[in-house]
Structure formats: structure tokens, C-alpha cells
Image: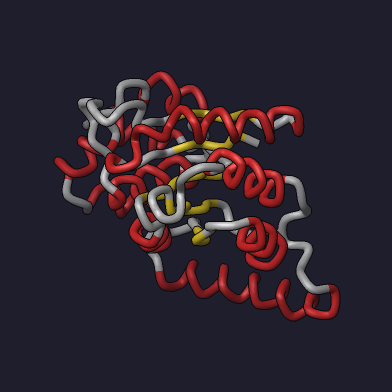
Length: 210
């Protein structure tokens, strides 16, 4: 599984810490971490939480990533921005219980972390424990055991509802503000990371045309 990391600008200074904690947990599991930045607060490409949502949607819909780890100061903005797009199911995760139950019950493909809220000493421990619970359990397996069947049924219903209430990603990319889209994909390493992994040629071709 390819797990993409996206840090928005207010929390860009934590990018290296997030990537390091994530790699230590998931690489022994056989997963790969791909860092889309922001890498420093001074990066030319300034990723707001809205851009983080759009970038996450591009990666997931183009199948360039299987999972996205993002966030912002509170985690709320990044979560909301991710969830407006098709095929993105993003949970707000701030502790190990959130991580475990989001994976087991909601079976999503993105999380938004509150990187400024209650993030002091031991912040790296919190990240590590969350990632262990998020990626070290069977996603969609349900919790508690007596709730497995209705939870799995509700997840399928949610996916069906979202398929009806959202448009396809290529249409969104063509109709969204094009300057905003260009800014979102202008990251220092976007092209070298995204295009080799993109599995939807139509999305790659359109982004290249910009």
C-alpha cells in the first residue's frame, strides 16, 4: 500500500516528524510512504487545508496513493476538505481509539490529524501509537464484535450514497478554479512522485495539460 503524507502550511514544520513516525510503523508492514510536503514552512507551494483536500482527492482517484495522512491545526478543515470529493472517506483522528475504530468501523482511506491541538511533549509518541492502531488492524473488520454486520452494511450504503452525491474526479478537475488547481499541483516534487504512480491516464493527461 502506498501511503501519501500531505502537510498544510500552518503545520509544515512537522512534516519530517510525521513522515519519520509513519515510516517506522508501516514500512516493516510492507507499505511505502510517499511525502508530498509541505516540506518546510517556506516552500514555494503553500498548501492550505483546502488544497490538501484537493491533492488527497487527486492522489486517491488517480490511484497514485492508496491512503492519505493529512491534517491541519485542528484537523477539522482538512477532514472537511477531503470529504467533499468523490472516493475519499476521511476521518478525524486525534488518539489511538480514533485510529483503531476509524479503521475497523469506517474503513476509510484518509485521516486528518490535529497537529496543533494538544501536540506537545510526546507528540511523536501519539503519532506512532495512532499509526500502529490505524495500519496494524484489519480495516473494515468492525468493532465491537456484535456490531460487525450492521457496520459493514452501513459502510457499503455510505459508499453508494457518496457515489450518487458526488461527480467524477475528472469533471471536477476540469470545472474547479484552474489557477487553484495549478497551485495545488505545483509542489516541488509533485510531478516526479505523482505521474509514475498514477494509474488513471485521463487524470494524468489533464494535469499535464495545465
